Length: 325
Image (tube, rainbow, N blue to C red; front, side, top):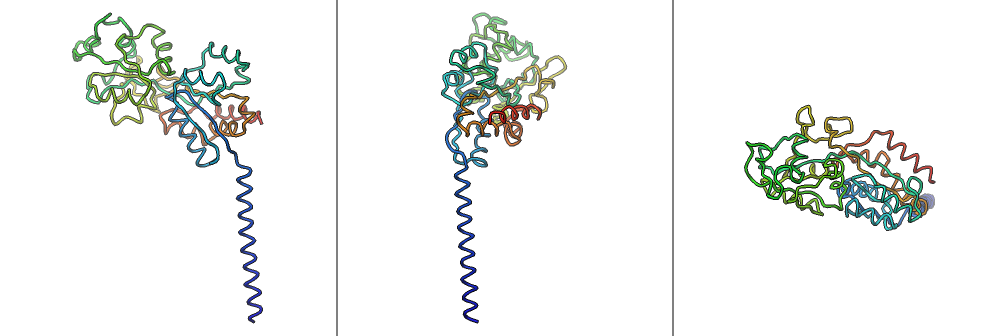
């Protein structure tokens, strides 16, 4: 009996040891087939929260040995790094310009073949005011545009809120917005102001956090930036409801869209991929696929203040990327 028991114990011990070794081998094999290396992204401060969230989930849930670095230098500044090949992706809150495409061509990169453009989501240009501002809760689109145009009300002196509507306070308007590095500035200047001069007293900043603080500390301030930044700062800022002709519309995920009530201030946001790097570096291609997967932009857009695109658009991007394998 004792001999039989010893044999059984020995057999169980060998079986357990074998299982442990198998587990270790499986873990090792998994690590060997896992990806590693860096993915470098820079560009839009508006897109930054969404892309950073996608990167965090990717590194946490998919590829822990891949280091995805996401910067927020601004759309234009991002392209200045992307064009000479310093980054794998370039985020932008406005579409790439022809002059930037020409610069890519000069570097030997054909737009559409060596560089892919992906729409990530839809954003709503948002005008924000101080929580104590109880008079400008809603404004027409024309009032907002005129307010930011140079010379509409006063050529050299400070613009007053009462210049817009006589019953409003006769107090100086403090204007704020992102600087020329940002696609949000370019979208506002080119698409909304139609390249007309902006009011001369506007204070343009690099950091969105600075803009939020400045408006939260000044009862008579107004600023513009993407809805994504506003939605994360609703505790200290108020958004102006905009009347596009059919009554005031607040920017929300339910109203932002190219065919929805906030369409007048809706814009797509983008990321651009260096296809050559995607072919050379498997982690870059893998992350690109994750961005357009069901776990990427379509899932995380709403959590970061963006309206997702229709599923079919992400599916088309996935097919494009799978063809690179």
